[in-house]
Image 1 (spheres, rainbow, N blue to C red):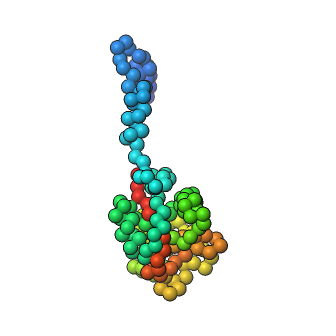
Image 2: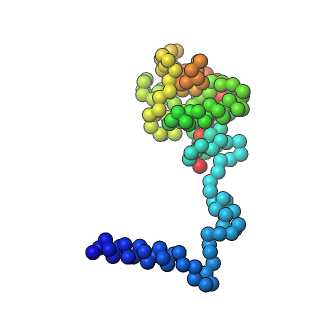
Image 3: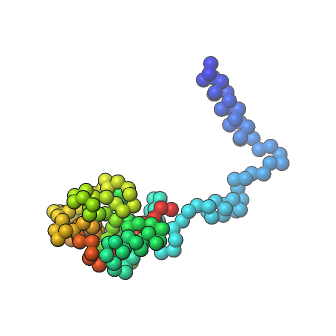
Amino acid sequence: MLTVSLLVCAIMALTGAAADPEGETDLNSGPEVTSSIAELMPSCPPGWTSYSIRCFLYVPSTMTWANAEKYCQSQGGNLASVHSFDEQHVIQTMIQRQTSGYPLAWLGGCDAAQEGTWFWSDGTPFSYNYWATGQPDNRANANCLLMNFGDEKKFDDQPCNYIKPFVCAKKL
């Protein structure tokens, strides 16, 4: 009986919603609504690349990992974390379009707190692994993550004091 009552209520509500009583304004049409909705939708700042719910920025200026992270924080984000192949591809494509190549670039991965335990500086789980063959190897106390390493253009661990360009990310 409850099911029938709910079904009747749903039909009545849908029938009432479909009716267009005289004198009512249709709030879902017209250019005013369309432009207002577009203004309310978040978008990336100029120069940033949008993907999913985040914005990415390739910064060609070279810095240490720590200074790159500080710069990204000053822009409202962190060094980029990567959570899927598609995200990796978007970031690589963004860099390639700006540089006509695949330069090494800092991302937000770090294992300085405990060797072998990687985390992203934005606090998200380090669950996507895209390490180049033989990496991470901790050679020369390498604790920070670079992308575009070697012929594979994958992740590599390098000493955090190396000076490299980097990628920032922030939520929309």
